Image (tube, rainbow, N blue to C red; front, side, top):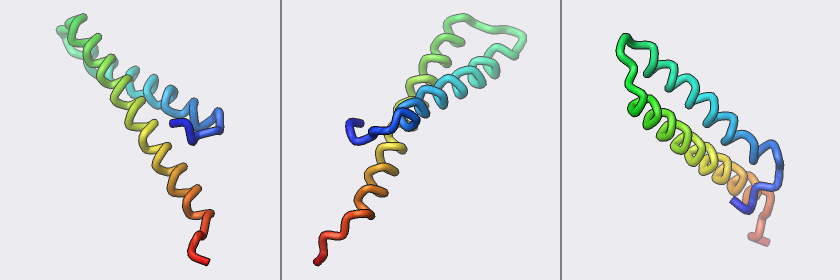
Length: 74
């Protein structure tokens, strides 16, 4: 993701990943039986999955908005 220059756009995937990880972990541990291994696996999958999906979407949005600004059909 070298085409994203804004520090805010680089921060969004981390914040989204932390948020989803917290809510997914709370959902897993809210039951009567909470297994530590299942909780850790759920937290890891939700963190990395959300991080990379958010990073991909931001990269696509930035790429599309930058390509709309250039009109090479002169």
